[in-house]
Length: 361
Ligand SMILES: [Fe+2]
Image: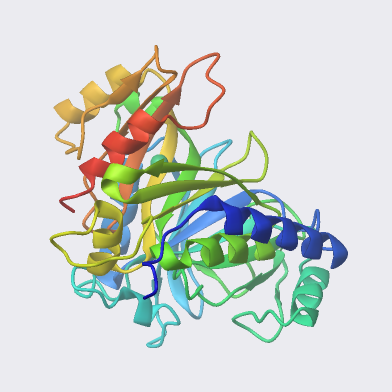
């Protein structure tokens, strides 16, 4: 009889070495940099309200809204953070559609954090090198515009996320290419001082199936210059929080999976259950926050609902909390403050409490 599948890090570490070597050999090292933007697609009727909600729960500001042949877009921006591009598609067909058809997400069939866009100094060369390795993109060749060169992967079969690569030709962050038309939108930033405490995007966490954890992480490493760093196992919840990093200062990509696969809704832990309900997708976006206790209290006064109180504290080195998911994006916000001298990225006790808090989503 076969033993049931269980993750451990031995095979993953071997895979990491293999991918790092292959990446170097292919000349891909240094060709993908940090996160430039996150693209969140929503139902067309929700575009404006999704952007407004985001303005009300982060430090990002309205930058501009525009349209092109394929979408309406709204750009939200904060110095030092990745841009957020809220989009709604004009095209009837979406390569992400199949990933959204889960019991609790199918009522919002176009809603998903779809793409993480990374900086690339030479998109054409990068695309050619990846294609030589047999890796395909969503388009046969990069899109060359007056402002940037861009290409993106198809949605990953393991995460449903796409990875985009952008080479700026002029000013960085100038998304408004030839063929775009500005929309007459002016979204107001709520006048709430605590929003200034919410800084850059620190990490995003994608939930993946236990049996696909290694492949999801290795695939992400094949496309970028990230590397798997460490994993926190929470046996009691059948959950692993896996962290991939570019450097200690960059946005981190987190993958959360079961240790063993989904069984039944009654028996499975929160991570595998979430995938049953929502399919693989980004579960939360974590924002680096200062004065987190005051900020959390202000959000509560403001009516924001949370899945859990603040967990951890200055003595443990970090404080974190999760909001309830936003109805227009299905995404949870995490607010995180690390205190001086804390050299770990996460603590097992916080990871445990945060994971447990997602059980009722
Ligand atoms: Fe997190």
